[in-house]
Image (tube, rainbow, N blue to C red):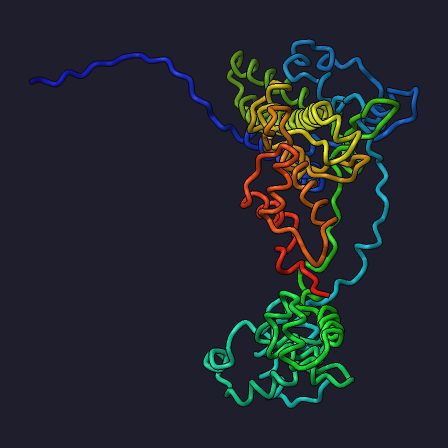
Length: 500
């Protein structure tokens, strides 16, 4: 059988992720602070971008005077409508489109004096400083620094002394001496091998008689965790009241003494991307644009780009009409200048367009959420409705992935508090009577209220909570209750029980 070669034409469509499209998608996922940082970077790198300066109301031409230094509009290049249409100057030179209900950023940045406060050292720096104040010899200080490097951010020794001895080359005796000294350092409990050791170090640190306290931690920690005070009192041959007093002392101990000095100890503040305020009988959505620079195309470089393109066109025309060798050279340089300016221009235009599109999308998504979750904003979390990404996507006629990106790392300030936009998306729990189902967040609120109102001596088990919810028409499994309880940070009934 002979093989035949033949040519054929085929039309097909392919989606290509251009760098500009990738930038626009990435921008959707950015938080407000990340967006501000990115814009500042682009302002430094792209000469055709400049920050819009607020001008005196009633003098719209003042901004252009400040940017260009003249008001002459007789330049033939500026009056060329084909050039203006090509680059859509009217759309992009005036910066971003204004959205209804959005706030305007101030051009004056206040000095944040928090940036000048010296940063606290971490736990290891704190321990090394204390060791340096202990009058150790050079060798002892080396041993101490080696040991401190094995203490994690919670204050616990991350490896056994035998393993540290093999890694560091110091003997176990030398390391144990250094460890005993570390356990006397601040914070109290640092250098412990496990939780029991950490609690014992803090118990021994107390100046009062701690024999019973140490004994309870050493021998009855499991009963202490379950608050089985009666069992502890029988084993220790003491009264339940004394056991309860000792347990209250243990509750004042820090199970992770090093976290106060950890890298995550600095407070992280949430900056809302959008505000929802109640005005009259309706909730108004407004974007938080404070601190975000408003961009526009530089009028000076726009005019320069026109001139360079005109020079290039003229040079090419002259090079064809004559054999003068200087013309092509001049045209080549003009072409390079024009190409660079055009490239920077298009990048600036695309950035402004992407920022505008991002802001509009956030605004539309939030408006749709407010419309669908009206009862939440009026009555609270118990009345939040089941909602998925598809509901919002269909409402604003966008893809679900776009809605997902827009709601990532975005926070909304509401009269009910600050919430992440993803908070409003949750699954539904069906009712036995066939009426409107509840959202998972509303069920969590119910579970939390039931546990808050329970008898501490007879706490509700997960199965009992599931049974109580079934009585009010909610079909929910015990494992689902357990999952919601864990998400709320509530311990199981065995650890919530108070015996006395």
